[in-house]
Amino acid sequence: MSAALLVVSFGTAHPDAIDKAIVPTENAIRAVFPRLPFYRAFTSPGVRARLEKNHGIRVEDVSQALQRIRQEGHSQVLIQPTLLIPGREYEKLRQIAADSGVNCVLGKPLLSSEADLDRILGILQEAY
Image (cartoon, rainbow, N blue to C red; front, top):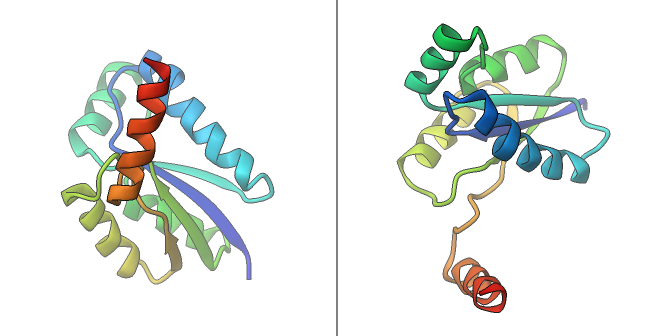
């Protein structure tokens, strides 16, 4: 079974913000799965449209990325969202993954539980 890695972000219409925030986050996730082919998707249609119109940069939505992953022969996808909380965007992502026809393993957002919040609070208290 061939697996792939898909990192999903809300996105940003500013290429410098992609380079400074999204790419380092993606790279940290990629480092955990160095042998898996990497794919990116942004959930925000408005962000994707502005990015393409203003900067000529095209980023796939989740459905497009999953379709391409399947077409390129991968039967399993590890999906890691960079979302902070499990809200509306995460629920949409879950539904798209479930309907994709690909075996998807979906990671959780950063702050998915009270224990996550406690860990982040401890880190912030120590840092500041």
